[in-house]
Structure formats: structure tokens, C-alpha cells
Image (cartoon, rainbow, N blue to C red; front, side, top):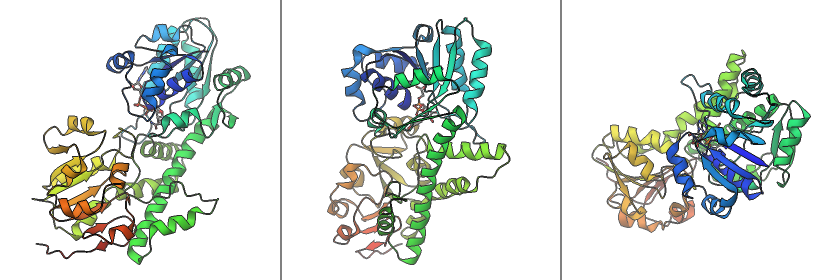
Length: 439
Ligand code: NAD
């Protein structure tokens, strides 16, 4: 099939590349000429494991352009995978979706199906359909379907090639047949439903996961107060198949481009429909407080960060991605700077992006050793493998005072206990194997 994809971000680009792998002829469109230029030279503008290789392997089936007219005019299917960011009031901003729709109605010259992959509030696809039908420039049949995306950054390619499910929201059989055909070579359970239910499945799934994270984080906070160990608690809970061990890792909260905005958008939508969604509101509130948990913990050791050298390990909201959107590290760094800290950071992929925001205020390090050298305290914000595998003894060898605040529980407490350090993590006992004289 001839497929066009609007948006070459984490969703659009990965979708386009994976559809090309399954034999479709794909043209990816973006309004960002720099991204397209890079893609035309065969380079992925985002980091996702396997993406670059897959793009190279299937380049004969992939083209990239800023010219939406040429991309859309004779496509069988047009996916919309543009961003739906958060507005100041928490609602979803649909400007980019409608902009893409405008470009589509101007360009299509044959029957096609427009598929909304972006996460959009319940009812959006219906409204967009009405809008498209009343703004069509050519006498062609344009059907509109919802097909939310469930990929997880850091494993976007695998999630797209082998999805847990494919949800197709349609109001008529023809659109259903076309979208089924797109996915005919994928092996995944199909959920065929109406458009509103498909949109709701996406929000309900994301918000449930956010809720699960905030729940285990609250359990962790209580564990700290009563002397239980959240890792053991989560392990014990996870054996129950009704609960499952996924998303039971306590930490300093969720970030990224989805959970924060999708929880707020559903809460906003519920309010709009005169309903107070209390559990989702609780998930949001718990997460906000959790993000700065390590800054509260550090007060146990230092009254202020003024004059101290702080090592920061990890910037992204999770490992295996270069995405910094809503990353807890970026909430903490300005507060640390305001408190007078000298900051040295290490991250394997995100430093170039953060440098744009803090060109001179932070020292950027190319190794963990360099970041830890002569530091008074270390904050771990992302559980990169390099951090998890970093030899624990190096903290006391390199740091001025080996105080490690671990927001992602990277180390086993039994291993930490063998080292001369102070190690304060989430929902577990504090390990204090050295005396400190605090001034
Ligand atoms: P992104 O910000 O990485 O990419 C969006 C891209 O769309 C940008 O490159 C932008 O330049 C481009 N764009 C904007 N307007 C355009 C237009 N008119 N035509 C063509 N391109 C246009 O966004 P993302 O993370 O890929 O997310 C896209 C959507 O998918 C969002 O609704 C998001 O909630 C949803 N989603 C994201 C993920 C994820 O993990 N990132 C997972 C599932 C669903």
C-alpha cells in the first residue's frame, strides 16, 4: 500500500520505518526542514534502539519530504502522528493535528483513509471527520479512523514491530478493511471498536500505568517511614498475575512526553464533562511531589547545596531514549542551581540537548568517573545500564564525600553495604557505612 505519515517524531518515524519493513511504500512528512534534511541523508534525528539500522535496511521503501502535497495526493492511507502537547490548563493542544488535517484536505486527489495515531481526547476523531468532510477540496472519499499508538520510548521499534495489541476505532466497514490491510503482516491481537472507545483505550491505558507508578511510589514513601523494603514488597506483589511485576519500580516519578500530559488531559476532559477523576488527580499530585524527593532527602546531609559539587548521573526520563520531555532531572537541576550547587552531569545521549538550555551553568562530563570526581554528593536520575554496572567502590574512590542519592534504585542494598558510603534510595533502608561530620 502507499502510506503517508505526518510527523517524524518518536511515533511517526518509527511507524513509517516499521511499515516499510512490512512491505509498504512509505513517505514521511514533517514541517521541520532540518529533520527532513537529516532523514534524506539517511540519518535518524532521534535515538531509538535499532531505528537507524532498520531505516537503512529499508531505505528503498522510504522517502522523506516537507512537501505534503506530493506526499498526500495519491496515498491510500495517511497516518497523523504529530504532537498533541499540553496546554497551560492541562487540556490537549490539537493545533498540529488540525494543521495536518488542513494539509491533507488540500492535497488528496483520490479516496483514502486518514488514521489518527496521535493521542487525542475522546471525541476528537469524530470532530475531525466532520471537519474533513466539510473542508474537502476534491470530490474524493476520505474516511477517518482512530488507531492509537502504545509504543514505549526506548523500545519503540520492537513495540511497533510486535505490538501488544492493535486498536482500530472505526465507524464503517471500508475504513476497517483498509486499516486491517495495513496491519495484515503484523501478529497482534486486534481490537476493533468505535472511534471514541479507541481513543479512550489509549488514555485509560496510559493513565492506569501512571497510577500504578504513583501507587508504588506512595508505598515506597511509606516503606521508608516504617522500615519495609519496597523492592521486596513489589516483588511479592508482582507474583500475583492480577497485578503483574511491570511498572512496580519505585523511583522519583514518571516523565516523558506521554504520562504527564495524558493524565492531565484526561483529568481536564473529565472535569469538562462535570466529573472529577479522583484517582488520576492523585497520580498527578503524587508524581509532582515525587520528582523532587531527592532534593528533600539531601537536606539530611547538607543544609544547603551552596558551595557543594553535585554529580548528576542521567538526564533523560528513562534509559535508552534521548527524550528529555518532563524528565525529573530537568525539574531538579534549576532548583540545585538556585540553591548554589556546582553541577557536573553525565548522560550517554542527552547532553547536546541540555547544553542548549544550560550552555555555561553546568559542567558536562563524558564519563561517570569524571562527573563523580571530587563531588560532595551524587544524584542518580536515570537508571542507565552504565550506572547500574558502575563499580560501587568507585564512588568512595572518586568523590570527596561518597553520598549517593539514588532516585532509581540502581543497586542492590547487600552490595552497597560492603562499601564505605552513604546510600539513600527510594523506599529502602538508608545505608550509612561511614561517619560524616556535617557543618
Ligand atoms: P514528537 O514531538 O516527537 O514528533 C511530532 C512531529 O510532528 C515533529 O517532528 C513535528 O515537527 C511534526 N509535525 C508537526 N506538525 C506537522 C504537520 N502539520 N505535518 C507534518 N509533521 C508535523 O511527537 P511524538 O512523541 O512522536 O508523539 C506524537 C503523538 O503520539 C502524540 O500525540 C503523543 O502523545 C503520541 N504518542 C507518543 C508516544 C511516545 O512514546 N512518544 C507513544 C504513544 C503515543
